[in-house]
Image 1 (cartoon, rainbow, N blue to C red):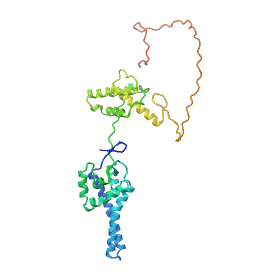
Image 2 (image 1 turned 90 degrees about the vertical axis):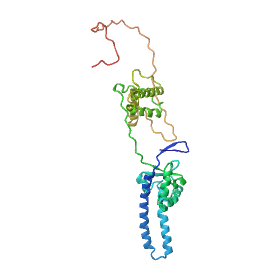
Image 3 (image 1 turned 135 degrees about the vertical axis):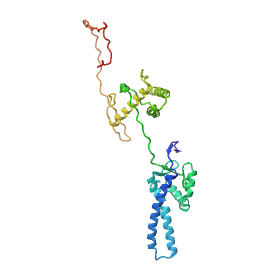
Image 4 (image 1 turned 45 degrees about the vertical axis):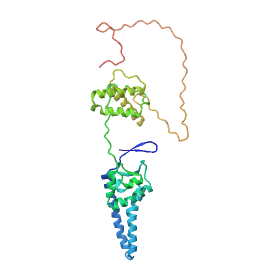
Length: 314
């Protein structure tokens, strides 16, 4: 990974191409260019058969420069650093700051390529690439360019384990807007790798992450809920909200997901008009009538059963 810093102090994570992939890309380009050069040379030999030796030599040198030097420069300029060989190998030529190259960059690379690649059969380019930290040849150094890899194999994304069933939907009222992306990433990395950690180390990390999450949400920590299970439930709640917003469905808590109407650029959105609510008229208290007490059935132990907010077991 190359730590390139732009003018805006942004670190670019680019993967420089190494010698084998660059050599294969250059070999493919040379095969195509030499094939075109041979075909054009045969046509020019037949077309210039009636000319003298000096004229035929001038035409031959001109065709060599145009095909083996001018065509690569034009291809790199028009394709923004992707020749046929680089396209096949998944490479691209970019500037040192990560931007696309221009004609002057391709011109310097092509001019040095005549000496590095054609006259020395690539030996100078190989030596310079081996001694360079980012695998650059002399043309890249003087042009201020870098060959990077575009097709990088993606890492396998591990799914977040689901929370316990008794925690599903319990944290639907949490305000997750103040939780930063860095904390979400740390929680996700912990949940996907907690089975690979030492139990004591994993438990301490879960407690620390849960404390940070509670501090961001502003809600008190749940009593009797393990820290890892709390993290799973909150991450599952966030994923459910994201899915609800993506498909424009009601959120798991029952509240519809707000979506604003598109407003043209330069105009203010129309104000939201709330429906009028009728004022509440106070009513004088009325003395309660005498109600006979209802006998409460007693249980087998002689005490009345306790009323709870949970459904009785089936």
